[in-house]
Image (tube, rainbow, N blue to C red; front, side):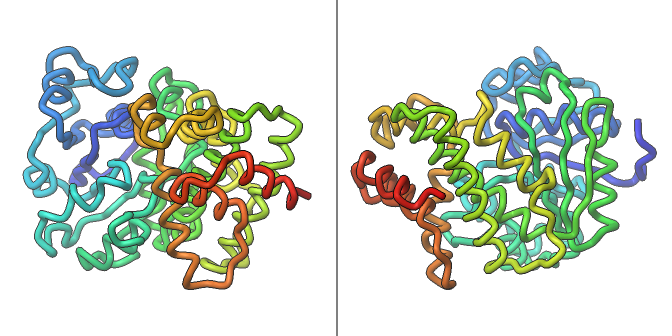
Length: 336
């Protein structure tokens, strides 16, 4: 166990696969991890069998170090640090009933890979604007990572990003264990947008794969996607010290684009094979962040002069019902 401050109490908010994996990680370093889940059956499954019966059931959990509850207010009141891991599509509905001062004096760690669709804000901006939490009390955690590999304790590298390096270092201590290494970064906003964008591009790559294209074309397409992501970040979140070839940007992009566990890739493959959006969502049974991210980025980019033809075509396919063959043909014309 790392030498963490005994007075610090930490909670995980969310009951999905990534939330479950994070609870597993944190119990390596903390004697007590508070955990809020919406579903009573998850609470019962964890308390009775030491696993989440709905998500990532392969992860064995140390129940002696977990205090699980269906009361969000109760969990928040008991802790100093909140790790938010609900899908971005549910952030607003999960938190909107809290008072505006409910998060006062809390550290907020976002492990959410999306934008709040109701307000078109990144998670840090949403927390700052709705709960008046300053940016120096916020941190983001990103991959490359998939919950399934955490469950089997396969070595994974994460990044903690915050404009407050002391907080980033503390979060790194929380997450570091035998099978997790973690770096720190000051580029919180850049990382937030990067994890949103890579979901869109992984979904787009899945569409190409589902439509029958092979590895040769996908390698070219992903190279173009990376360039588009860099272009977007340099305009929306300028940072001359950002290293795009590091784990939190290129690494996270690659694992989402190629991994068998990638929901966005899987969702895109269904679309490429001719599934409707609704049918793909029903079959996947889990949230594809890239679907919601596509609309959010489409709206956000209206405030900037940004050329994003790949993200534009994904939006057209998902929300404007553009013919897939025509959209992919448009993208092939710009590939370099």
